[in-house]
Image (spheres, each protein chain N blue to C red):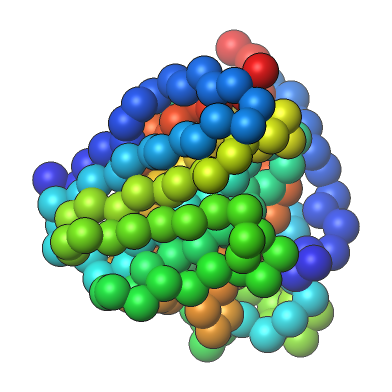
Length: 112
Length: 109
């Protein structure tokens, strides 16, 4: 099974409220990624876990948190959503950093 | 940014035509991935080309990589309606993964 699952598929949030997005994979992949994608823009890497080690991009370091309680699950947490967080959030996993990434269908977050 | 200008953002072609999408990148990479994204789904890898390869083929797909000019192309031969999708190139570096903006391809029957 090469499926990456994401929940929920759609999320509505109020400005200032927290948001928690969930991703799971059963391929026993070492690495899991979170991307943000806005219309007409490239997917932007936010952070990734290699095993239990979290790597966050410098420009999004303080905006997003993540946890990986086990190999299969990874969450993306926004402590206080702003309007600029409205986007598609894509989760992906891979065997290692240079390998093919398998993507989930995404969670569309709308912040009002 | 990792990316230079991509030649095209949107392409519309007739079924049966050939099409080429280009991208250029700024920093060293060992692998260029090409993904396609269908509406309502996440991106899926369609072809991968490594820095020691100049060309890679998979069915009707052909990818090229020119490390000296830091550019890659994806060609589709005899495009079909089901090739309609958004195509992204992506490069990998140490602890990062960069996507280009993508090309929206529409194949008209």
